[in-house]
Length: 185
Image (cartoon, rainbow, N blue to C red):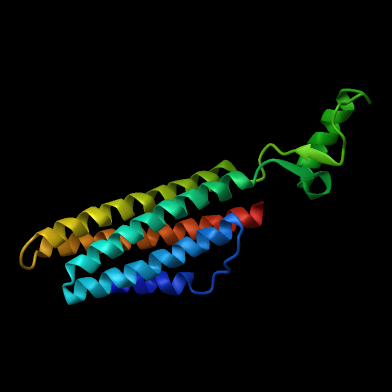
């Protein structure tokens, strides 16, 4: 689990955090990495109370990350300046406007975009954020099970490690798709 925490912390170390949805997504992903490192350290020490606390905080951070990923996905739509539309959309808008004569009700300066973010990128971003949320909940449950068991349970440890690796992968992929969405948007 320490390896997964280290990979996630390395991947999120240089992300810029601000008040935008993507900045908040980066902040939540850094918090996930921090809490995963705390969880890993607590598991290595055998501190069951700290494991449960870290798992709860980690699950809460994945819920926040999911919320911000949805905001990033939805924030790439809406009214945009005509000059910022891709050339293909400007051409379609011009043809559409010309076909309805000069009494077209929309001004040319603003146009409601069909979608600045392609559906595939949006869907992958949302699905990776949901996967991270699910892994966070599963990790919380597994930590509670491990804390309630006596002795060393290799099955529970293996499940925790697998879940942590899955969470790391989902968070990194969500960050990657959020960056793609920001570039396309």
